[in-house]
Each structure stands twice: as structure tokens, then as C-alpha cells.
Length: 488
Ligand code: AMP
Ligand code: MG
Image (cartoon, rainbow, N blue to C red; front, top):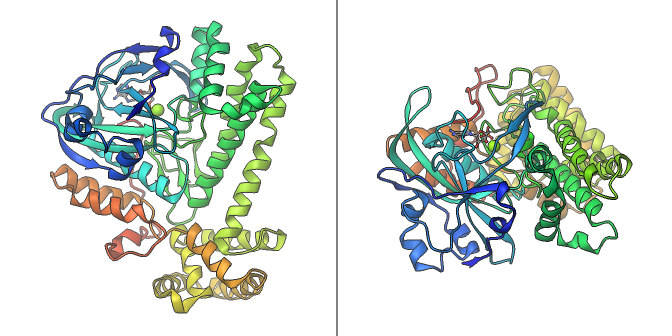
């Protein structure tokens, strides 16, 4: 691997160097060979033969320089003070095959000075959820952390019950969170200039070409975040804990806890059981992104040449960037040109889904069964299932809508429309029930289901033989929601 540990050269107040605390009797959970290839991990015999020991903290290769990062944050809208890596360590930074810097971060690997009341561990269930979700989003084409793999162990961890400790070797283009700047502002304000330079040089070097690199950088973070959240909305992803310490400065999805993928469409859906006010409900995500960035930006006022007005200019493109990306994506999902008539059709379609509690993923995909039935037998079946769920009144609305929709579709070359629909509407997303089946088997020592779900999510836009009916079946309309809550 091409190591490039640069974070460790920053001011020592920003982190704490320490080795991981090993897990007992570690065993293979799953390994992502594609990520290993991309990182150059696969080309190193020592790393390949000893990966279980490395993930379990029993062996730290000489080039690794493990450290826990300090950061702070606003949690559920309240200032939470110092947080930091309480159960994870940045192990190494490497240049991947595309010459992109990637962090290797080991999560679940013991106490650090930032553990507060926690035990420094992660349980198998949350490790599998994070592993599969990073993979799912990456393969869907949404910027996200991913992972090299995970191990399970005999170390017992107390949650509501005793559970097996696990560790995830996470891979992300950065682990710097908006909350890093909040920490600096509160605890080491003299570092703001140096740290901002580090972020620009490392992650946004193109901003050096601007006459005002800092403002160009801040604007770029705003735009990338807006695009990431638009991607979430389009695919039906709800992060669940959009605290400022869980948002990356690279606009890449980070920190998976009580996330979820939309099933029966409800814009007000709250997927995090601990989110009593619905702050992080699916439909609030774009506004929360704006709120977080606003909190973040104000700290840069300490830098020379940065004023309240220039910061407002950096934040201003957020809404337009989000809307542009979201609306364009929505049109592509329907195979339509990006224009006003298509958008009103799109919003009518979403209303139909909402009014009839239809499955978000299946319903979009089902449209291929209407548009190009001959080549899409699976989607024809989805369409039949969908229309069978409509009330008589809704049947009429659906028929009226589909006539106008098919007419609007004439504006686009047929092949292009079909291609847009196939590449923007997944067949498979990580439904909670799907993750749960993989977890239940893994808790009995069986990892075949994790492997099957992993393979299914590797090509989410293609209908696959390894799928079962359960993979695409939403819960019953009025079934109680599976409780998924914060840190585990
Ligand atoms: P999260 O809600 O997972 O984003 O975590 C918020 C903060 O709590 C971060 O500083 C985490 O490192 C810390 N944390 C979460 N779970 C644990 C744990 N089991 N032990 C120590 N720290 C934890
Ligand atoms: Mg976090």
C-alpha cells in the first residue's frame, strides 16, 4: 500500500496516539476483496494473511500510526462539547489505485481518551449494519464510507443484553467531520488557520487556484453536502443521526447508526427510534444539512478576510445545488427530460406513492414494466403488485397519470429513457428486515446470509438470481416499525 499518514503530523492537541485494545478470539466476519484491490491491500501478502489479526487489534503493521481524533459537535441541535473517536482509531492513510487519499479507520477497538461513558466497543449487529450500508451506498453510486471488512469475537459487550464485540475496518476519503472545526473553535482556536490549510491542500487542492481559497473551499463543502443529501433523498436513504459530528467535510456519507432505506413512502418517516421529535426525519434532511453547515461556517469568521457576508455567500448556493441535483435526479428516475412538466408529474407520482403507502424502491422500478414491458418481466410483476394495492379511486388517478406520463416520455429517445430508469432506480436496497436476517444468522455463527446480501447489493440495479422474494417485500402497511436506535 502507498502509505501517506499526514493527519499524525498535525498539532498533537488534535488527536491521541494509541494502539487498539485487542478483541478475544477474533474470527472472520466478511472481507471486501474489491476494496482491498482498490487500496493496494490485496497486493500485500502480510496484510492479506493477517487481516483478521489486524482488524482485531492483535497486530499493528509497522506503517500504521493509530490515533484517536478529537472533535466536537451539535447533537440533536444542542451543543454537546467534546466528543471524538470514542471507540475507533485512524490506523493509516493510503493513496488508492485512483491516487485518492483514503483513511483506514478501525471501529470497535477499545477505549480512548474520548470514550466518555462508553465502553469503546461495537456489537456485531451494528457492525454488520454499517458494513452492508457503506457497501450498498457505494454500489448505488452515492458518496459514502465503505469498509474492508469486519471480524467478530468472544469479547462480550453489554447493551440491553450481552452481545459479541466486533470490529469494522472502515474506509473513507476522510474522517474529518464538521465537528472538528467546532472542537478547534472551542479548545484550540489558534489551530484554525493551519487546519483549514490542511483540509484545502489534502481534500480540495483545486481551491488553491482561487483568489480566495478559503471561501472557495467552504463553498465546495456546501455544494458537495447538498449533492450528497439530494442523492439520499432520491434513493430514499435516511441517515438518522445528522449531528454535526457525523457529517464529513468531503460530502461523503459517514457514521451509520439507525439509518434506513425508505420502504412504504412516507416523507415524515422517522427511522431513528431515539429521535422523539423527528428532527432527522427523511423530509427534514435537506434543511438539517443547511442548519449544520450554517453552524460550521460561522467558526471561519476568525480567519482573516472572512466576514459574515462572505460566509453567507458560501452558504447561498446550498439550496439551488440541492434543488438542481434532486430535481434532475427525480426526472432521470422517471426517464423524463428535466423540465417543469416532468417535475409536476414527478410530484404527482410521489403523492400517489404517499397516499397509497406504496413501496418507494419497487414503485419506481415498476415503471419499467409500464414503459418497456417486453424486456422487463420482473418489473411487470412489480407493476401488477403495485396496482393491486391501489384503491379504486387511486386506480383512476394512476391511469390518468400514466397516460400523461407516457406522452411526456415521448420527448426523450426511448433507449435513453429506459437506460436512465434502469440506472437510477435500484432493484435492491438494504431493507431493515434484510439486514436483520443477515444479523440473526451471523449471531448464530452463520455468515452466508451476510455474504449473499453483500453480493446482492454489489449490483443493486440488476435483477439477480440470488435474490429471494423477501429481499424486495416491504413490511405490511400498518406493521409496527422495527426499533432501530442510536449508538450500539
Ligand atoms: P455516534 O452516535 O455513534 O455518532 O457517536 C457519538 C459519539 O459517541 C462519538 O464520539 C463516539 O465515538 C462515541 N461513542 C459511541 N458509542 C461509543 C462506545 N460504545 N464507546 C465509546 N464511545 C462511543
Ligand atoms: Mg458518530
